[in-house]
Image (cartoon, rainbow, N blue to C red; front, side, top):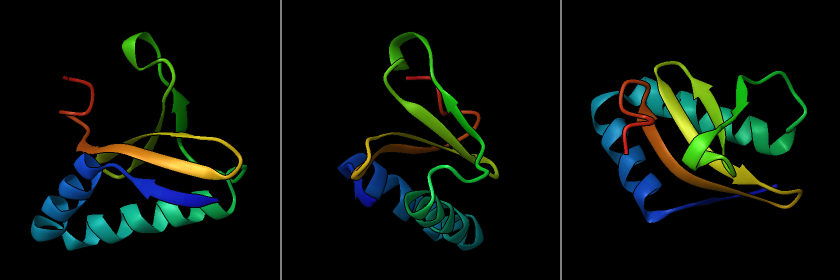
Length: 87
């Protein structure tokens, strides 16, 4: 599965990388693992409400908001857990 990032997600990942390189590498590793084996053991949740078409992947203190089909994984946001659902 191919991974595509929104501009917002790229900015957020760069910001995380500046402050916390370990978490940034964990996020990238989790995304790559999920894209290679989506049926694996991941903390994935289908969201409700205004986010109802998206999924959430939990990686440490961060939440990755994305959607996927069989070929492409679109990453919309990567946020700290306290800020993930505020918008």
